[in-house]
Every structure is written in C-alpha cells, then in structure tokens.
Length: 472
View 1 (tube, helix red, strand yellow):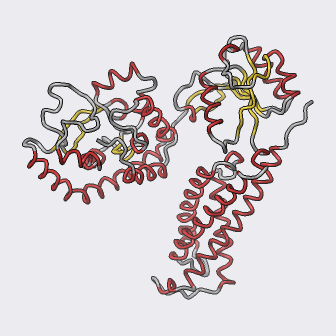
View 2 (tube, rainbow, N blue to C red):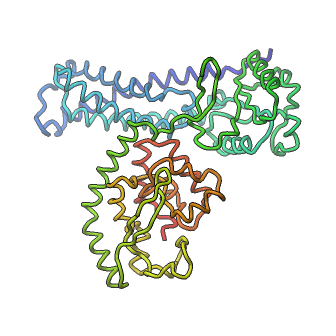
View 3 (cartoon, one colour):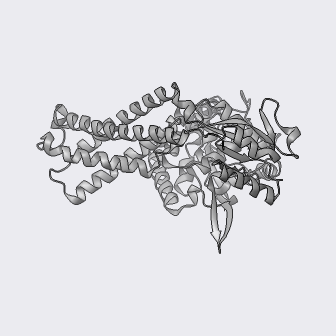
C-alpha cells in the first residue's frame, strides 16, 4: 500500500493551535472591553460603574470567553476546510460574536450574576473581541498561506472521467490559490477519454485505478462520468475504501440548489435529493419578514420628502403621472403591481414594446437619468415591501411577458421565484442589471437563494449604496 500523506494530522494540529489562539484572543478581547468600561472615561456612561475589581470580574470574563468559543463551534468555525478561507471564517466570527452578545446579555439578566454585568461592558467587549478575533485570524491565515503548511493541508483530487461539471470544478480550484483542494489528474473512462482537457495530467484508464492509487498520493476520488455501471462504481468505491481514499460523485443530474442536497433513508433505502433551501424554513421566513417590515417602515418615512421632491421635478420636466405602475412576477409566479417614480417619457415603449434600458437611453428624462443612477426611482417599492409583494433583498422581479420567453430559453430561470423579489439583489450589486448577461444574473440569483442569511442581506444592502455599475 502506498504511503499516505499526513494532511489529517496537519489539519488537526493547525486547528488545535487556532482553537487555543481563539480562546486566548477572546479572553484578551474581553479584558480590553473590561478596561475600556471601568478604567477610561467610559465608566461615567450610563450608571457609573462600581464593580470594577478585576479579580471579581475575571470569572465573568472567563465565562464570556467560553460562551464565545461555544458560539463559534456551534456555527462550525472549526472546520478544516476553513483554514484557507479567511472571508468565510470572518463571516462566522461576526455572526458568532453577535449571537454571543445576545446570549450573554440575556443570560446575565436572567441569572442575575454577582457582580452584575454592565450592558455597556458587554457591548464594548463585543466590539473589542470581534476586532481582535478578525485581526488574529487574518494574521494566522497570512502566515499559514505563505508557509510549507499550506501544501500539507491541501488535499489532492483525482477525477474519474470528464464532464462540463468536472471542468467547472477544475477551473474553480485552479483559479483559487488558497483552495483546500488541488486537482492532481484525471483517470480516464472509455466514454470520456477523448474529452479530457489537454492541460490535465492523465493518470491512466479506470481499469488500472487500484495501481494508480497505489503509485500516487491521492486523497479524494471524484467520479464525473455517471455512465459508469453500478458494478464499476461499486468497485471504485471498494478500492477507495481499501486505499483510505475518500470517494465522491458529482451529481450531474442536480443543476440547481446543489448545496441543499441531502442523503435521506426511507425504509433502509438511501435517497439523494434536494431538501429545504434556507428560506423554506419558517423561522428564517419570519426573521426576513421582520427585517423587511422594519426596513420598509423606516424607508418610507425617511424617503417620503425625497419622493415628493422628485415627483415635482418629474412633473415639471414631463407632464403626466409621476408614478409608474407595472405588472411584475413575484414569489411562486404570482403577479403584482410594482411602483416606481417615472424616469422616462410616458410613451417610452409605445413603438418598441417591453425592453431593458441601455446606457445613454434617449427615452430617459434628465432627472430620470439621475434617479436611475442612484436607484432613487425605486423608492416607492418600500410600499411593495410593506404589503408583502417584495423583500428588501432578493432577485429583481421581471415582467410576465419577458418571463414567458426566458423560461424556455434560459436554463434554471424559474427557481429564482422560490423567494420574494427584492428591491436590490446579489446580481445587481455585482453589476448584473439592465442589458447584461441573463445567464450570469440567474447564477447570482440562485447563489443568493442557496446561501441566504440575514448577514448576507445586510452585506447586499450596504453594497447597494457603494456599487452603481450598469445603473442606467
């Protein structure tokens, strides 16, 4: 049997060091919060702090650090695949710290700790610990990615067969220097041998897979050719088991919502299928709806003066209605009336029919061009959000007549209607709006639906104010 690389031990060692570092950093971050609250002018904020003895408060600091680590562990921060994924780790750290803030504060109020926990201390410690953790984790990643350890924890993948999905996988891994996997080569099959990309290392035919695994250091086998018979797949899986190699299959027949694929057993028979996406969960739906209602109410109150001003400017430049009403398709294919401030001439589509705006569109009003650049024509849609037709964030709604065309021409178009359409979206903040690639837009929409979280929504809302590419 070939000698195997010790990447699991290397990963476990690095995760252990990371875990111990997290404990220390969390404790120091809480100590910094304690110092700011009780030994700086902040002690005069609110009820002036009296319980400032560090020896007494230290017990709460240790308990707070334990709560933080539990929060991070619950959100799966200590996954070896995140060692080279600083952005994903940072996202978990932000969510975990916020969760800790709510948990620690509520627990301290319910249990009546002695000494009593200062709410200003908890808020300050939340910020100091979050900052310390992010700095520590990015420094850890910086050192790791530039050391020999990076090679030790990267797993080698061999593909069995070749397909468009395996080509996409190979390209994604190759383009990402810090990907936890590297494509070592391809094991050819009779039906795909001629399709293998020339820049891939060919390891040999699938009939020789046992010898190939014996002679090469391979950690994962990924089957990309589903034309292999059940007996062949079973034989490959058995060889992988004997050689201590992970066995995986690209489920090419699943093209959308692949992150929701789950193995289920019914009467002892294993079934692979798509289960709930995040927004199928009732708690997630309620949480998103609460954010939408809050945002819509605040948005309507703050934007009302602006809408009045722009309505007067539109009326001054172009006689006719200032509000533009249009039928759009929403969640589960149901239609609704969307509201916008009119930014074009009243007869803009009389001769052309429905079409997207283009750069320097002659149909736009002068004030309309400004409104569209800054998305101000969309302000009335806070009302659509309030009544439940739309959400603050989601795929942008399209007209039914365009959808009837797109659903036959563009693969996987209709799954975007699994959620409410949004005032802004992941595709839009990435410049995919107006006369841009529909295929790319759908890909971004589906990514959003698969990976939804409140934090993702907040990120998109913030980016909406910073990115205006292709807004015309």
